Length: 194
Image (cartoon, helix red, strand yellow):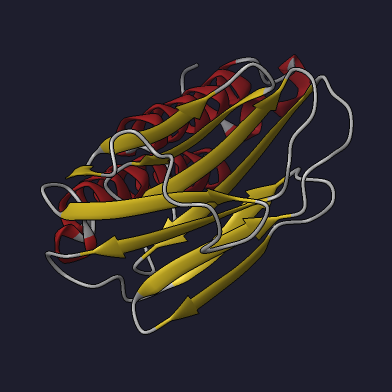
């Protein structure tokens, strides 16, 4: 009986801790680091950063927003969410090298962290003085789809609080089912009379 009680107590505790984590994560998302509502300027230059004039459309906007350039060979996009920058190049034919640069005119960016990238050859990026500069050498032949995701202002994507709650409830449910399906030889571990 003591073992069954300890296990049940542990599972209930795990579910409560999971729920508390959900409430804490849901309430503590770094609101100050959010880009939502900030005005961001972006430039895209082909063959080198700062060469050839800006071809992004739009060249400025309020986050969340997407900057884009489309031609017969590829589609270049840079999408700002509240906490991330996603850079994508969908190459249908070939891609000349390019450079992208971004500034936040409302509150300067405070940090930039590469989360993931499948660009080949690799992207290079620089973060100096609150300005994001990203460059890529391009490829001679496509088709290919390249995506890089950056965390901005130190905010890394976190699991949605609701999914953590579901995980906690599922964990507790699996444990309780396991207790109920205990083999007949372990009756001494269950509550008296069962």
